[in-house]
Image 1 (cartoon, rainbow, N blue to C red):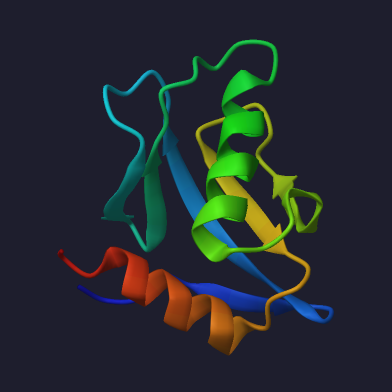
Image 2: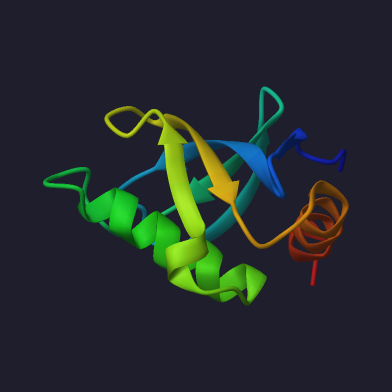
Length: 102
């Protein structure tokens, strides 16, 4: 599987994400047009899916939740998520490991 697009943003990094809310299982699904596809159980109501997305990435990347920010697409399925404490190379490597089949 190819790597998701990761870009530098200040001292951190940004990744394009495609969210699938109200999924049966939560987790990384793969890639969707170069964006990382993430399935979430939370519904897209009152910011529940956005909060679930930031918690999911914080746990997956082992970073504080406050360092994961949705910088674009808060009301849509296509988003850009910033990681303030991870440089692009580190984020890319962690995402590739998370995407590897178990």
